[in-house]
Each structure stands twice: as C-alpha cells, then as structure tokens.
Image (cartoon, rainbow, N blue to C red):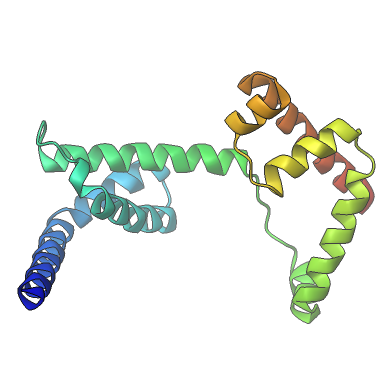
Length: 179
C-alpha cells in the first residue's frame, strides 16, 4: 500500500512539474514583456519574471478558474512589478565609488560587520529610550506592527509613524557621523 502511495505522489509531482513547464514555456515571453513595460529595465524585468513564475507555481492552488489563466498570471505580474517599483523607491540605493569599492574588497567582512554594529550602538545611544525600545522590539525581536500595537497600546499607524521617524533619525545621525 505504501508503495502505491509513493508512486502516486511521484506521479502527481511529475504531472505538476510538467504542467508548470507548459505554463512557463507558453507565457514566459509575454510575462517578461509585461514586466519590461512596467519596470523599463531589462534586468529588473528578468528578475521579476522569475519571481512571478515562482509565485504562480506556489500559488497555483489559488487559481479559481474565474478568469483565463493568462489573465491571472498577468495580474500577478502587474501587481508584483508595481510592488517592486514601490519598494525600490523606498529603498534608495547608490553606487559606491571605485575607491570605496576597492576599499571594501580589502576589508574583512566580519570586521566590517563589527564596525557597523558599533556604529549602530553609538547611534542608538543618541535616541530617546522609547524609540530605541521600539526599534529593538521590531528589528531584534521581529515583532509585527500589530504585535507592537497591542504591546505598546498604540494604533498601528502610530507604530508605523514612530518607526519611520526613528529610522529617519538613525539615517540622519549616520550621515552626520560619516561627514
């Protein structure tokens, strides 16, 4: 009996993988074009396309046949790309200068991490105790916004705003210390 169950599971897995291969081959170019039209960046579109197919693969059970599969997939693609653009806007990144990049190559990663920890500790000492507590609960203990809201008896929007302001203070203090 166990052998037939194992055979059935492997058959289902093979069938599922085959179905995904067909889905991928049929729609990959169209999903890539959708991603490219939203992101306006070939590398980002390629990354998004891969992520979208992984997401679709893991959520295939959620497809309810209320629309065509292509519509469902394009909807995932569109929303995923928009989310990525929003996230990229929030996470401002800058290219390192060649000098900094070369210096980083010479730096021991553990030493760099220890320096960052020391800098963060020094920056945290410059913040009010309530802000430090909130940041530690959120980022060291990984408490969600709703958990913080209940624990600190504040609204979720108040928690979000306080976290945002505290992060901004840390950034400003870090910039000032590096100048």
